[in-house]
Length: 429
Image (cartoon, rainbow, N blue to C red; front, top):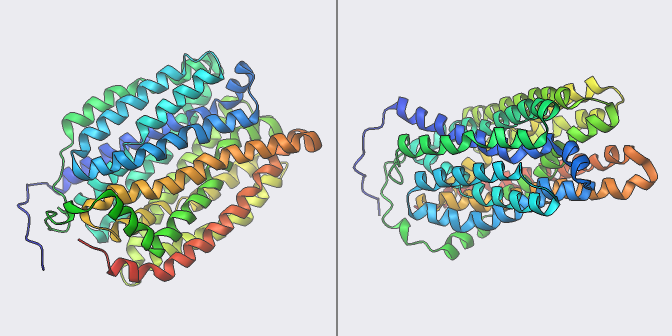
């Protein structure tokens, strides 16, 4: 039975874009505060006397465990209540905890503060994804989500650039406090300027029936979709490389190539930030352009991008030339970022209107628990294990795990594309 049309409020095209840009700003703060510890890691290691395993825990698993655990119930709340309020409160919490991180006197205090950042950030992206999908229809959704996802890499760019130089001149504690405080003010701005759209606005549908889905039903539906499982596992395994290599690259450049903190921050801002932003936008734009006639292209384009990146990754990890490393990083991060927006868009296409925040949260559970949680930690542990045999070169060989993991991810994405059409066609309202 066809759903009735909703009574539409008046949202101009300009206002829709405004909301998209404001939410992108939230994501910028998200990744400034999430990744700032990466560029500060060598200074923190020296100041607090930490091992590589402890650094991997701080920059990965400690954050990811609480991020993904709380992400599910908060996303379910976002599917039922006001998403804008959830986003604003979350931003204020994680920004405050970033400031608190700058006051940590030992590993345990810093660990607890980073857990607080993870708790805060758990509420932002699923709710933001859901709002964006209500403002932008399916044929524009991957591009809109790509614009939002550019916040990841703009945040990394700003965090690396300012974090590196603030660390060099004022210390890692000052860097955390200076970069954490503006997010509290931005949370107030979000609360008063973003309007909550009706569910199903972009499809011109009502959601009165979809509201009856329980948490268990949503989770069961997602687990029954082979395409979703392949995309979620593929994204998690790919992000093992993205976060594993990305989080250890500053230490790699400092230890093996003798680069200073400010120089590292500048180069990684260009490569990881600028290259990543370009890649995530291209991934959304190209898949929306070519995916209308063949929906498998939403996944096949990212597969080709990942495969093209692997020879370049091998070269940048094995070379003794630091400019090959930083130049290769620009290309690799561009190609590695194609996957995110089309995967989220396809996940939203497989579920009902009031399941979208949950779909994003479950997708992020795989992505962050496997990728962010295990990638940096496993590579740190491998580096410690190999240190007795290879010394500082141990990090070089530990990072080659990125080649293996992204190869597996490319296969899983390809496999998911073979189920995509069927799973999209049987999505409930």
